Image 1 (cartoon, rainbow, N blue to C red):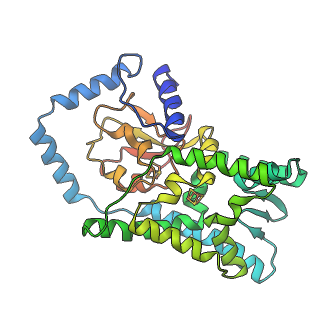
Image 2 (spheres, helix red, strand yellow):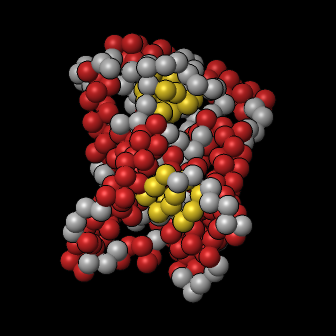
Image 3 (tube, rainbow, N blue to C red):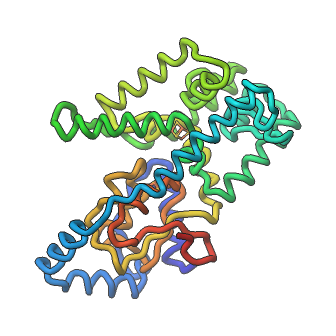
Length: 330
Ligand code: SF4
Ligand code: SF4
């Protein structure tokens, strides 16, 4: 990795914790090749560029390839919990927070941390389960937990569609919040576990509530999930995942070390921004804004959920799944 990309990566980690992305300035922050590409794009006749964009859009077929793969995986994985419990087939026992996959312990990393903080001692099976999950999500992309497994993600995606429809009709306006809130909430929930001896977050986590409701049957806690969805539909787009959920941040940290990521290629990009419009975490895509890319190929930051919506949305194929050290995946 070049010095420019290393600096950029450190910056992306800070952005994940809530800092706003900054425009690169000076030769230490932008490679010579990227600078040349930006200059060439600036020299391109604006009308030619608009015409090319319009042509591309007109001939672009809407692709939902990654979204469909993800939805199927998410639904099947959550159904496996249900089927295992209902028919006692012991493939996947438990719920998302803690389970056994064909006998192997697996514990959600955030839940495991909360339990350790609350009980103030290390439980061997818990650590084994957390290590299994750590290795798994290291390989499969950190926050991919969110978009490929979390049941709340799916409901929130559908709520987001309603929210965007209402915004288009000018019936509601999106109220963005300060992204640093999520880091603050992470600390608050960790402190609450430490000070009270209870895993307070588990009681209000829509991820855990939905997973348990699917497996063991609905309860009153679903009203809280409903309230979150209503808030997101009428007030703030994807508010829980963007500004509150500590699980997302925990897996984001895992994503720092994951070889699976989205890669951006500057050369073919038209900077029309379709990818940013569909992204749950558009701050990770600041690199696609005209003049921002620090190199001709830039890995997208660890807060990315590897959902693939931007890959589906990009009309020029400038975003793709990638494994660090290997070439483009698909
Ligand atoms: S941020 Fe939290 S609620 Fe949102 S998808 Fe990730 S784990 Fe689920
Ligand atoms: S950058 Fe792309 S893959 Fe990552 S969260 Fe945004 S839309 Fe999904």
